[in-house]
Image 1 (cartoon, rainbow, N blue to C red):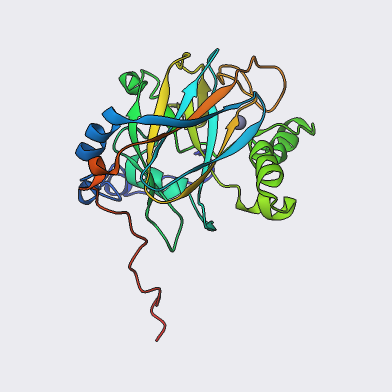
Image 2: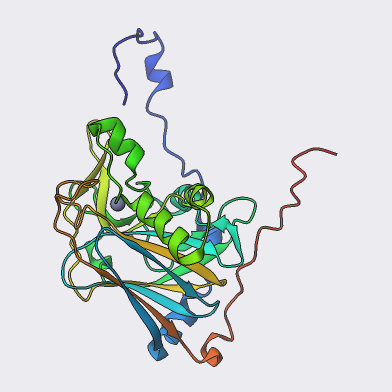
Length: 287
Ligand SMILES: [Zn+2]
C-alpha cells in the first residue's frame, strides 16, 4: 500500500508523473493459432471420466496430451483453486505470474496457461468459459483470476492467529501426498500459485487491495481446457465457498466441484500447432 506522506513532492513533479502507460508484454505475437481448430474439435468431445471434489478438500486428476478437461459447478456456487503440472516432470508447473503479465488479471477462452522457467510453454489452453459474459464489472472485478495466490494456513495464522488445516494450499498438498505418494515436505514445495477458477476478484480503486465478491457461478457452469502436454491437475474446493464473505475457515457454505476428462477423435486435431518448451539456450551471458 502506498502511504504518500513521508517524502516531499519534487519541484519537477509534472515531468515525472502521468507518463503514458505502455503494455509490458504486447501479446499480439501470441495469437492463438489453435483456437479455431479447438473450437471445432470441442463439438465432438466424448466424456471418458469424471471425479467429484468434496468441499474443503482437493483431488488429483490426469489428462493426456490432446484431451480436454472441464471444471464444473455442481449443487451450488463454489470457487476452485487449480494447480497444473507436467505429468512426467513435476518441476514444470503453472506460472500464474507470467500468465498474468501476458494476459492480464483474469483469463478466459483462447488464453494459455504457461509453465515456469525455463520451460515457458503452454500447458493448457482455455477452450470454453460459460461465464465469459461477465466481462469486467463496475468494480473492475472478473472471474478466473491469476492475481490471488491461494488461501493458506500461514497467512491465516498471521492475520487471525488460528491454525486452520483446510485452506487450498493444504488441500492441494494433502491430495499430492495421499494420491501420488509424494513426501509431505516435497508436496508442499511444489504446490504453486493457482488459477482461481470461478472466483470473482479485482483490486480496490483506492488502495489497490485484492478483493473478492460472491462468484456468479451456478450449477452447470464450467471452464474447459485443452491439454497441450500430459498433465497432472490438482483442484481444491476452496473453504471460502463462493468467496462472498470469508475464506480460511469453516464459516462459508461450500459445495463440491466436478472435474471431467474428455477425448476427441485425433483427426479433428491434425492442424494443432504443438506447444514446445522454450528454445532459449540458458547461457545467461556466461561463456
Ligand atoms: Zn482457497
